[in-house]
Image: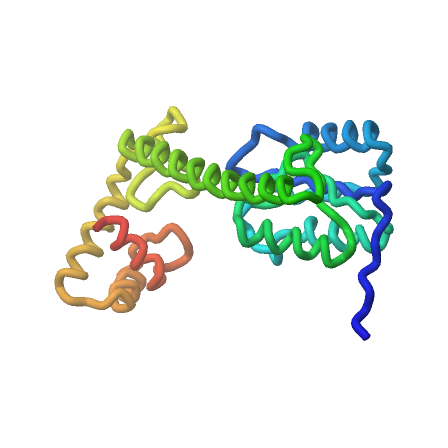
Length: 233
């Protein structure tokens, strides 16, 4: 006979917080406070809180260790509620949100949002949760589009957009703008000339190492030359 699903204690809850690099409007302190307020107002014991820090809402479950720990903790602590501050803290991806909800329900629990949106067992509540998941995914796409547009503007102004300073440039004294590095610009011209002469990327790296041309690291590699050529193009 199939194993009967165990119904967990609805008066005990496990909290889950997610803070991404994309949206910082709801930090961990604010999320935790929202969980504590809901638990106190609804007579639910908040037995544990798990936090995924710097995790995108589109990250798959194998990249969400705290979320998986929270779901496991529901069974271990007999907690029938997985509590989040807002529905989009679970995910900003329809597939991921659906997988989380299925895992929680199969374990005998339910997901509750501290803001009250989409809570309940009826068809209207289920519809609201589906709508919120769609809008969470849409909002993530909007954030990414805005971020890419902002970075494009910064690059057009010659400003640093994060990460390492590209080969051929140095960071200006203001710490924002990039200025050409004459020595490295000369190396770029050498690489482009070698490529026009028909040398392969690997052969160019070997030539630069043989001629002891200075590299950012210990030596020139094929991947380094490949990135340089693509950036120059």
